[in-house]
Image (cartoon, rainbow, N blue to C red; front, side, top):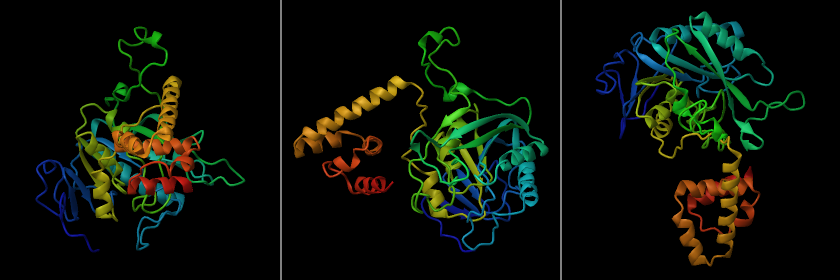
Amino acid sequence: MGRDSPKEDVALRSSNLSSSIEALVKPGIRDVIQIGRHTVIVGTSEMMPEIPSNSIDVVVTSPPYNVGKKYDPDGRFTDKLPLKEYLEFMGRVFSELKRVLNPKGLFFLNISDSARDQGKSEAVAKQAMKSGFIRIQTVVWVKSLFGKGHYTPSGRTKRLNNVWEHIFIFAKTKNYEMDPKRIGIPYADKSNIGRYAEKDLRDPGDVWFIPYQITTGQTIKKGHEAPFPIGLPYLCIKLVPSAKYVLDPFLGTGSTLAAANRLGLTGIGYEPFPNIEVIKKRVLETHFEEPQFPLVPQLERVKNTGMLFLIRLLEKANPRDKQEIWETLPSIQRKHFLWALKDLGMLELFVERLPLSEKEQILAEKLLQL
């Protein structure tokens, strides 16, 4: 298989790994892609001879769901195996994950049932336990709630659409480490401060609302059939204190490594069919905000009130003042402003009145099509 030539932060090699990772990843016969301090091993994770036992602190992954997605552009990989063969395949990967995971580490497995294939996720979780993992907990990842966020319509007239997925948490031993307050949120009822905690901080619980922004189109999907948002592995990794090495055995676009990069950690991923430029762009993503749990209604009201105030201000301003007001907002806030206009049903009314950049104009056009 042909590979892209090394450039900038990306290097392709089989040995002489960078100093940040050479103590962990053993040189082998498979190609290796270096992206800064991160390593992508080109090949299947059914065997991971490149990684020593007990060396990985966090595993976060979303495996192929076995529903016929096209991951391999040449069609050599089959994502629609008989269930027995699929579980055997997953079992080989899980056995290797148990070998490489640190005794204090955690394994986060994101997988969902399709509308027509209920119960498969539970079978995969049981396969992980057969491989020796201890099942700790199940987090519910909500992708869409009351119109916020997006999901793939699949229910039709026989079932409701799936708007959430499992994140199964496994451990190698009972001595695992987790610190939920590292992803903590403020108390809605401040009287609980002092009763349950000294600070205004509590763990967010086992239901996480991490919406996709846009999921349609190959450009937005970033060259892969089923990427998950960077916020998902970010929260999983952050839960594990003192983590240093992060592994994703089904890397895809590199969201897990992107989260590790954001947290200043070192990531390793296995991917049989890597799109080097897509992975590089994803891993080195700079426009990323830590997920926020919108659990305090007062904050939602304040945000909406502020949005309406800014809308009225822009509506009344002359073109020169409007340009100045718009440019005082950071680019990420301008992006969120367009999304808020879409949510409020006012984007079409204001899109022609705002001094949008070329990229903002493209985003506005995509939002109007949703």
